[in-house]
Length: 82
Image 1 (cartoon, rainbow, N blue to C red):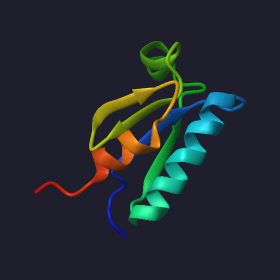
Image 2 (cartoon, rainbow, N blue to C red):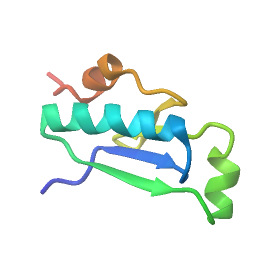
Image 3 (cartoon, helix red, strand yellow):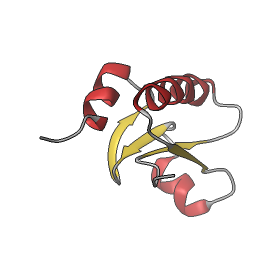
Image 4 (tube, rainbow, N blue to C red):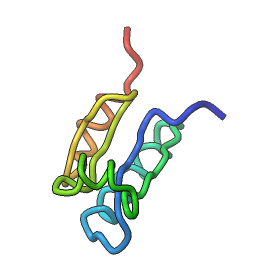
């Protein structure tokens, strides 16, 4: 399996994280992509970096979205480059 192109930074009990995860799961399944989820809970560096913006989504190592994930924008970001 390929390396995940999408990374979701989240924390347990976050309803926006649940919403973002559902969008990411659906888009990645549709496009045959993998994603990874990283909890910021208990990691002071990640808490400081992302604490107010959770969930945060990265695509190909670059920040893509925070708070909400737009499926159209995510599909576009994952589209093959020509």
